[in-house]
Length: 118
Image 1 (tube, rainbow, N blue to C red):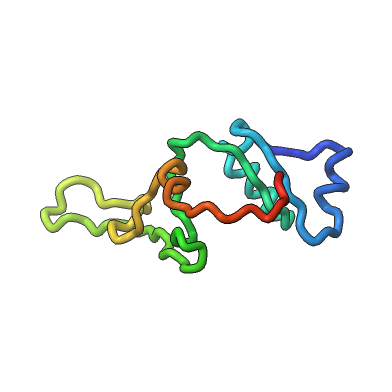
Image 2 (image 1 turned 60 degrees about the vertical axis):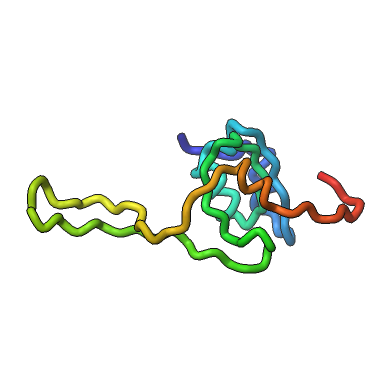
C-alpha cells in the first residue's frame, strides 16, 4: 500500500517549518511505511498503536541514556552440517530484548506538565 497525501495536505507536508506534529490513530500507526514517510519529510509523528506491540526503545527509561540497538546476523551452519545452511538474517542473541508498549509506558516516569497539551 503506497500512501499519497491529498493535494490539500501535500503543500503542508513540504512546507518549510521548524517541526510539525502529525497525529494519527491505530490504523495508520500500524503501518511502518506510512510512518517512515513522515520521518522522511522531517515531521514528528504521534501514532496510536496496540498495547501489545513489541518495540526496542532507543533510550533507557531515564530519557537520557542511549540503549544498544538490536543487531542481525546469519547463524553459522551447525557442525553436523545436517539441513540447509542458514541464509536469512535473524536477530542476534545478544540483542536487547523487545518489550511491549504497555511495559514501556509503565517504566517511563511521568514528567511534570508545563501547561501545554496536545
